[in-house]
Image (cartoon, rainbow, N blue to C red; front, side, top):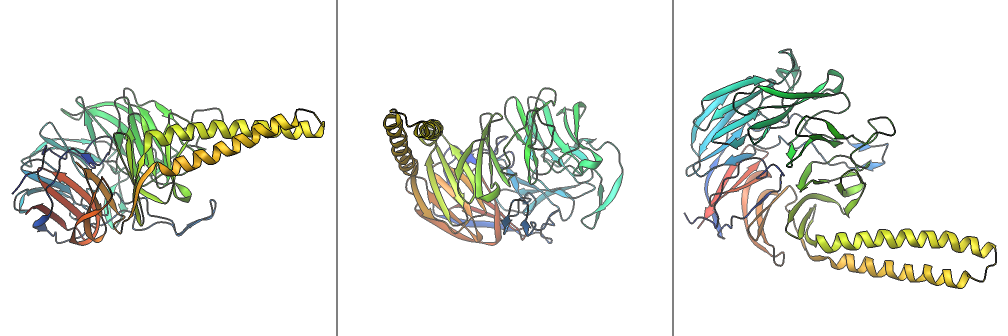
Length: 454
């Protein structure tokens, strides 16, 4: 098997705590299928479909934003491939070379999100309300209840905790983070605990939004997904909520994002959260507490790499010169604001029949021309656009983009967007992982396909 350049582990969902979906590893194309793991049972998602419409915001044909457990997302090291199952309540380990199962570990509820591989151990949460630390040999190191009590309820035709762990677990500098609970009326818990023994370090509760989907983490902040609501931002040191969900708190308090709505895909660029798809197909870029639309398009995923952003829509894949785009967007806002001010002044001067009308009119006209120039320049920031029939997942490996579609996965060159490889898979390709020369594709049928160099 030919290994890729800079072969590396894929230790958590979408590669890292920023959920970047980016690795420097370059896979050699074309690839062949090395093995397929097909479990007896397909994933059993907690939420099977979206609401049909959002009448308040007048949005039809809504997209499903609760896709975190529609496939068995995998993490991998040089030797093995690991995943949790929502169908049989287990964590599974496959031999990376053959796809044969090496071991499995039972929890007491569905495991809906991928484990995190850190320090030679696996960290995983379960619908039983517990966090687990398991060795890469499948041995329990510790088990810690994150739920406030062991109270169980019926859920998804199972008996689960009233506070299931549905955020995954992230680990950094000896500290693990997770959320427990999905019913705000029953309190939702977000915790930091020791990665060594599971001992609780801090706990906060929230009564306005759930905690479901993959956590994101920067050096100082923890981002807690909240389904269709905007993510909640916490201080990693003590759990203090830094930004509130828009509309969830009284006027005068800080809030996090605009009313774009939460998204099924999110990534971090430093301490800047990019999430989508927002309502009306908007992708939102929110630095701090400001409202700021990054790009307007019917988008599914965004990959941020260096000065470029790769935008993944239902039928299109494109690349944006992000740095220039943001600079132009800042100028556009300033010119637009100045033009509105000048327009208001012009209206006032006309009523007064002032001799200054021509001067102000010229300023308004010049501002309009500059807005047209900026709009044209912003369009030119899209370096290429190509048709893409694989809208369900996207990762960047070296200079190749891999996209998951219906019963197929495809590769696109980052230089010009040209499709350079494709292969068939069994089902909708919701998950893509790149590690140690292997392309691993997870589908809604439960299949895990492994492709390697020919």
